[in-house]
Image (tube, rainbow, N blue to C red; front, side, top):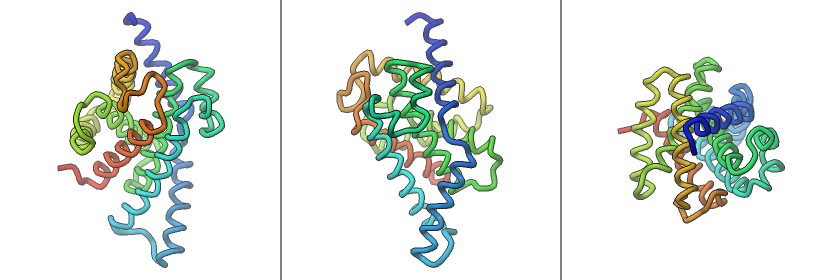
Length: 222
């Protein structure tokens, strides 16, 4: 792939993902639903860190399952609203990456809503994109067990969050694009999957991104 093609791919990927992710307002509505269910069950508002963790775990479970269902891109348009748009913009294998990233950003948008309700919509969006992209890219790039990968990703997400948001997000799309392309070329995507992500790979990837997000948002990073 020449330099220009790489640039195009990554900017098209960024455009597609930004087009199909949910808005911070939609994430607020989703989280309100989880909070209402929590209140109905426990007869109190979810205020403690432990309460927030319970809600976060439900959100991660939901998006990991959705991500598994989107493992085959042919199933994706019916499973994930907006993926038809991504197919039109991107076509081919990159759509798999766009669909996976969309769900991870959506999930992080909801998790940001659980932990950082006071932020502006724009800041919530930047935070969700940075956590999702950095968590995903680092997992794909790092060799080792899940726990080790998670720890490395947590630290790197923190570093990325210190940079200027828009520059950081552009850099992260570039990193994701390169990492995922290299993995696909080498057929080295976890669990020996080829270009199209399998449901089990998507499930694991999304679950770990969710755990990294919670560790960062709950300020658990050591």
